[in-house]
Every structure is written in structure tokens, then in C-alpha cells.
Length: 202
Ligand code: TYD
Image (cartoon, rainbow, N blue to C red; front, side, top):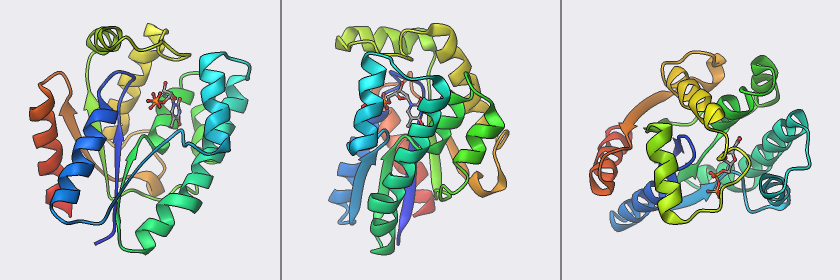
């Protein structure tokens, strides 16, 4: 059955790894799965990444770019896969725009420019303290980008995600079933919890 699973969380929470583990697990079960991410690898996603490495855009313009990249993503990747009956796993989605861009530009406006985003089947929040996430990124030797160097922003984003997982600050069209997973646990334990959450809705 077509399902749209999104994984969210602050920078360094381990979304990328967990999205891949979930993808591999579902593949092993014989499911038809697509693993994708925002920002995308398309032209708008590339522009966003350039900004994140060496900032040149106003925060409002950046919010519009994330929203535009998402429209392209839905149109070219997510909807065709769902229409073909596949399971789509997205590493970040519209909730990232609300949580991150909402720190710097008007929250209602961010919701407005994203209002044609489709409702996912479930959203998984990998919750972790900013301190631990920062430590993990440093251990991995990640090059720190735009939002990653700003601890206060990350604290705000973490709080915003928790609020979103409780259904607050969201238009009705974006309310969905949330699972909050403690991302400070071991990788395999987190993966198990995500599998249980996903299997409960598939
Ligand atoms: P990230 O998931 O870290 O991509 P990658 O793992 O490929 O570097 O996303 C890059 C940054 O973009 C991250 O700091 C979160 C931010 N972001 C937003 O601010 N708004 C959005 O809508 C999205 C999708 C990401």
C-alpha cells in the first residue's frame, strides 16, 4: 500500500542513517520503496546547498526556495511513486521548513507558502539534545553549515519539532500521526523503534 513516511529532527540527530536503515529493512521485506530527501538533488536543492555552505540569500528568499524545492520534489518524485503504489521515505519534509524557517521568518507565512504540501502517512521525530547532536557531528568530522553552527537556533528548532509532533502550529492539512523516538539511544534500538512505528501503520 502506498505510504509516505517522513523523518525529521535537528541537525546531527541521525536521520540520514535511520532513513537508510528503514529503507533497507523494508526492501528486505520485499516492499517497493523509494528513499528520498529534502533539500533535493535537483537544481533548487543545489542552490540551497550552495547557500548553506556560503550564505548569500535573505532568510525569506531561502524559505521560498525550500518551499519551491518541495513543490518540485512532490511533483517529480513523491507523487509519482505514491501513485505507483510505492512506499516513500523522505529524509526531511515540510515540518523542517516550519521548524527551521519559523525561527527566522513569520511562521504563518511559512505555513502559507507550504500549504499545498501533501499530508504524509506518518512523521517520525528523532529527538535528541543539541549538545549530543553537536558532539556526534564533530565526531563524524562533518563540515558545519549555516544552521548547524547556531546552537540557539538548534534549540529553537528542537522545541518547534516537539510542538509540531503535538499537532501545534500546524494547518489541519498537515496534521498527521507522529512518533517521537529518543535518538540518544543506540543506532539499532532507534532503528527497531522506527520499524515498529512504521509497521503499525503499513
Ligand atoms: P540536511 O538534512 O542536513 O541535509 P544534508 O544531510 O544533505 O546536509 O539539511 C540541510 C539543512 O537544511 C539543515 O540544516 C536543515 C535545513 N532545512 C531547512 O532549514 N528547511 C527545510 O525545509 C529543509 C528541508 C531543510
